[in-house]
Amino acid sequence: MWIFLGIVLAIIVAYFAAKPQKFRAMIESIKLFYSEVSFEMTKVIWPTQNEVINSTIIVLVVATVLTIGIMVVDFILGNVITTIFAKS
Image (cartoon, rainbow, N blue to C red):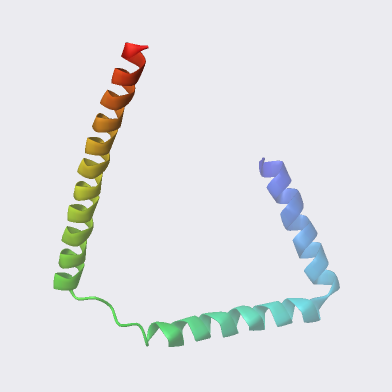
C-alpha cells in the first residue's frame, strides 16, 4: 500500500513540476477556499448550551416514544399472525 501511495505522490509531483502554473493556480484556489470558509464561519450562529440540551432531550424523548410505538405494533402484528397461522 505504501508503494502505491509513493507512486501516486511521485506522479502528482511530476505533473506539477512539468506545469508550475497549474500548481500555483491550485495553491491560489486552496487559499481562496479557506479564506471564504473562514469568512463564512464568522456568520455562523452557534446554539447555546441550553438549546443543545433541550434539543437533545427532545430527540431522546421522540426516539423513545417511536421505539415503544414500533414495539407495540410489532407485538400486536406478531400475535395476529401467530393466531392466523396457528388456526390453519
